[in-house]
Structure formats: C-alpha cells, structure tokens
Amino acid sequence: MIDRSIGEIVTENFKTARVFGKYKIDFCCGGKKTLEEVISEKNLNAAEILSELELVQNAAGSDYQVLDQMNLSDLITYITDQHHAYIRNQGPIITARLEKLVRVHGANHPELMEIQNLFATHYGALIQHLMKEELILFPYIKAMAGNFADNAPKPSAMFGSVKNPIGMMEVEHVEVGRELEELRRLTNEFQCPPDGCTTYRTTYDELHAWEIDIHTHVHLENNILHPKATALEASWN
Ligand SMILES: [Fe+2]
Ligand SMILES: [Fe+2]
Image 1: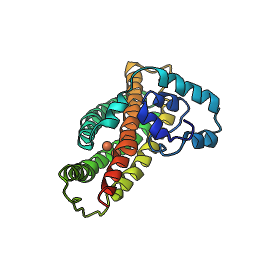
Image 2: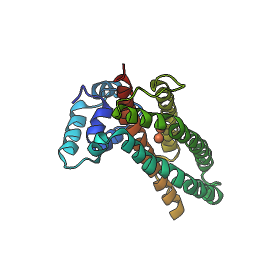
Image 3: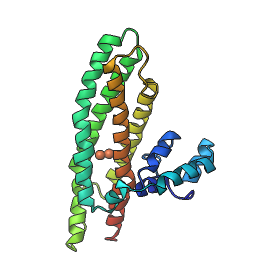
Image 4: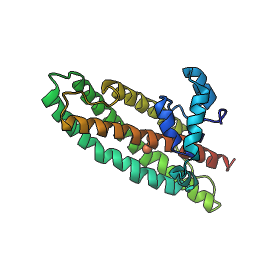
C-alpha cells in the first residue's frame, strides 16, 4: 500500500480519510503523492500509520467505491447536487453567524474578525470557482461522455484539451486548501474557547463541517473526476 497515491487509497475506501486527517496528510490537493513520499516528507511513523489504515480498511462499507464506479455524468450531477449546493446553502448561514460572533465576542476575540474576513474572501472565490466548473468544465466533460457513448468525434472546445481547464481548477483547489488551513489555524482547530456561547460553538462546528465537505468535494474532483475525464479524452487519440 505504501507505494500507492493518497488519492487512490481514499478513493478505494473513504474511511482512510479520517486517518490521513489525523496525521494532517492532505488527501485532496496533495492526493497525487504516494503514501511513502508523504511519510518521509513529514517524518511520520510508517508502521503506525499502516496499521491504522489497515484497521479502517478491514471495517465494512465504503461509499466511495460507488462514486468511483459512477459514470461521469452521474458523478458530475452528484458533485453539483451535493457539494456545490452545500456551499451555496451553507455559505450565507456561516457568514451571518460570523457577523453575530464578531458583534458579541469581537472585543475579547480579535481573531474572529480575521476569521470573518478570511471566510468572506474564501466563500466569494469558491462561488466563482463553482461557476467556472458548472459553465465550462462540467458541460464539456458531459459532452465528451455523450459523444463517446455515441461513437461520435471528440467535441470541439475553445480551450483545446480538457487538461487546460482541469489544470486551472486544480490550481484554484490548492488556494482553497490553503484558506482552509488558515481557517483551521485561526479557530485553534475549531475549538470553541471556554468563554464561548452556544452560537460560538455551533459556528466552529459548522466551520469544521465546511472543511470536511470541501475536502471531500475537492477529492472527488482531483482524484476521480479529473483523471477519468483526462483518460476519456485520450481515448480519441
Ligand atoms: Fe466543484
Ligand atoms: Fe472544484
């Protein structure tokens, strides 16, 4: 298992994501690295990680296998309905909660203002990112899948190869990952301070859930959708 990429391991069984999360191993943007590379980069205990991974892999059930086996159109619909909708629904809720928190606790917790500003930038950039996927990349991948099924030529695109918009989206994913790391740092790993009220705790829980959802979302795109779309395009060459 040690010579396989982090993305492959998570795709095969999403429960492994929890182990990687625990060791702060990036499974979405850094998913192309092998487990061995990451262990040596971070100077981690290989035997310990491998035994934890084996433990979760032996536990039953993995919803990711289903997603990995989906056709590309269904996978895109799943990503849009689940993860894009989540960002659009949850973003305004978290924004409103942060406004309230800054008002009530901002004087004692100046970091809340930083969190509010960071979240505003991060959410705004994500909305732009979703639009690019929904208007450019996803329709093209669906068109390719349709033409391939009909034995038709590869659909033409003004951007040339599908690798170009994919590359752009992956660059943006790296930035999204950096913003999430910063969010984690500013919230002290999403731990509510002792003087925090229920809204404080709820907001931090929601920010933590936000991080998990976006990591999952980026994983589905970087490690399942993008490699499959690239391979599909190559089938016309
Ligand atoms: Fe997306
Ligand atoms: Fe994306």
